[in-house]
Image (cartoon, rainbow, N blue to C red; front, side, top):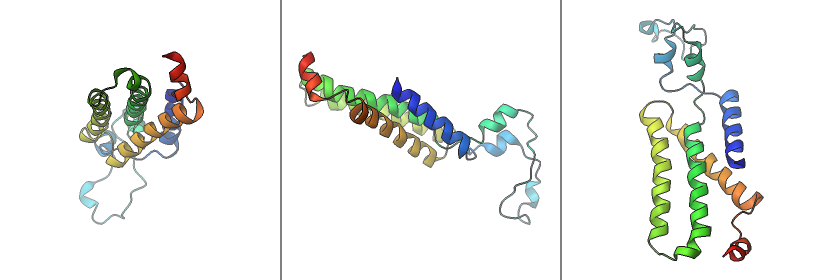
Length: 158
């Protein structure tokens, strides 16, 4: 639970402070800019008004960095991978089953991130940083702060 609260807080604070336009921002915002005149305009356009009429969608299209879906999925997947490695590794004693389950979990988390790129909700860097943050938060909480999977606790429970 703590990992999700920390991941949510990091994601929300980063989205609100850094933001970044989503790849589909122009389709959502529909700015009042004549695209035919873009070749004569400066490199960056700061003065525009969104004409879509959907304020929530306009604000959401400004919060791409970093991907919340990627960070939450990788936090969940990382916790499950750590759990399987340190709890079920002693029970199953299998050379093939545990790595297969772990790779399936990691693949599922990666597919969630990849889907965010394919549907133009995030840039590839947003997804990559979100996945890194999810793995990092799960690792720090599980192994450094709570020490949930230490060997002494495992041996006592078996």
